[in-house]
Image (cartoon, rainbow, N blue to C red):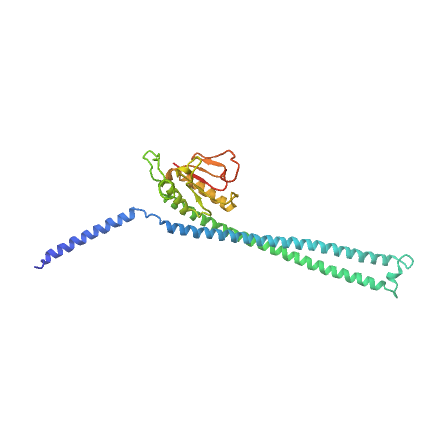
Length: 323
């Protein structure tokens, strides 16, 4: 094969360079104009990390408050000891002063000789009383010093914890702002329920698969499993009765077992799941949510009649029904 002339080779190289530059420019513009989608696993990992950070900050704040509480209790205890020492010393002083006054004013005829006769035990008794008063005085001085130390320690802790609490609170608020931002990004990743018409209504669906639920219900179920750490089982399809369960269009997210009231932590989780489902009802195809004897069909919560039990009144599980 004959070699290409130098002019042709230079022309081809120049053409290739121009095309590469155009391709690079177009590629850069496309990359710049299209905002990268947040990676869900990374967002969830960061959310878990920040939630742990917030928990540790709250624990730290609680520990500081506990230290302050103990310091104030020590101060109160020292104050009580001081009052007791003051009362004891005052009684001892009053007793010694009273005897000394009597001794000054008395004569042998009207004061017991036992106390003041030089050859008997009166002087010894007086010395014992004075020694006892001195001991009470030492106790009083010691209690006063301990009270002062406890008060100073409590004052230092109050000032120190006040400063540290502000730092902890600032960090907590910062972490929670990032958490809210991550949750907003995760909300952008909520899947669209299947079978939505152009006018916003939903195509009726039949249950499918071994779990006997509709595709739209399955999308909602998986989305909640991804978003929340569920403490107990989820019940969806069941035979008999009314409502959407026999149709494969509802799920119960249990927050406790055995018909018992859920813990405070799981009650908060039920609140979060219910609020999330209502918030995303139009995207997922949620028909209504029932939780804690209330129902929300998209226009706010309203009370329901008493059905006679924890489970019947939906105190132990949010119920989510789908179109």
